[in-house]
Image (cartoon, rainbow, N blue to C red):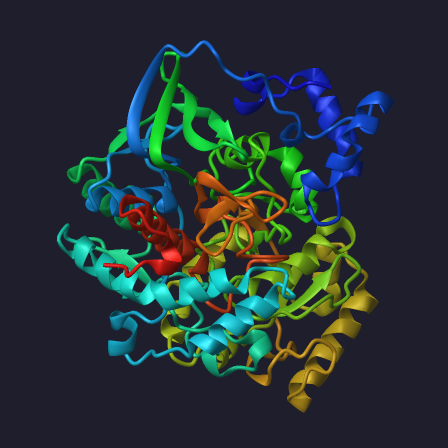
Length: 563
């Protein structure tokens, strides 16, 4: 079944193609590697087996209306693409950035800054060996350790440069502002350890995590990168969709063909290389169903705008002969929705007893994202609640001894609001709470009793929640909030080598083709690790700078002396 280039890339499959995508799910290889099916292509075709979209290259585009010449062409204007553009242009390259939306795209609050002068001067000198080991082991050793190591060793110099660059534009770095940054957690057992490795970019006028225009503070970083890139001559082309790469794995990649805002095909030649920075796969349902099916049970997607991040880099790369990441997809799912984010008594901030629709405790409750969210998405009916009692202020102070005042600020008003809109449930007895939640009262009471016993013993033998994060549920009234799950991003991309150069299935680098950001494969695997908050944005920024400067100066990142 053939899928047309135009219909798929604009986010809408034809009816026939949609049927093909659904039927092809069973053919997803266990490691997510489309190339593993290549040896059976002939048999599959004769037997009528349906292939995935990335396995069926469209006809080459021939009716090109215009050709433009550059040194480096970057596809995507998120953190990774803007970072690559800034570094390449700053180092003298003629740069074009292709972006399908009407402007640059930023998300999030924190950026990992491990090894930076800012962190060290503030008393945070993280053991790089330890951090790399935890990130690598998190993937069960499915990722490329050398990429993780490059991020850890090169981030310090990159952040040092970025700090000066943003300062020239009126921004400054502060310690990370998001609730994913768990201060004091660096001393916990390795399973739960979180390093204070991240920073946020703010202005004196707006020092918070969210600006007055409702955009998160990472937009300050993005806008600074964009201004520096354009001041150094980088050209941005918005409302323009990259369709196909020019060349193939054998001959090398020399450019990209796009559909411009007027609907014309334009070929952007790249004498030094094409950098794919097209983001994750969360906007492509076919890819999600194949590589990250658990996320279909989340409550929503809070990062990617509708029609965005549809795996364009994977499609173009595979059609040209690139291999998919050797690591599994790594969904980043957090315990908040936009409506719940302002409530500091949710599972995003607090460790409360969590029960499923059967009233049973189902997993470790720490706000250590993958555990509780993955558990909820696999509970019966995909529903769960956090349970706590009237002594919540005591437990907030116990769990957040260094900044409990921030968590408690405005809490009474917020609780009253939540009680009114139904997102917080209140009851005078556990039995009444069970009735309001629609869970078996005997099972809920049994879970409460078991949880209280763990608190009294100071040891959770069932799920190993540290004593600091256990509480009692004995004092009425009792409360419940839903455990929510939102997809932020689903990193999964193309197989790359240590220089972030895209490779074939045989590990041969493809001349002229590089991948950064969430389309860079082999960095995350299985789940997004939160040992180093901001590592996703951090690797976008760091590898963008490294690849951009390396290409501009005719070297590779493993030989680059970043400056």
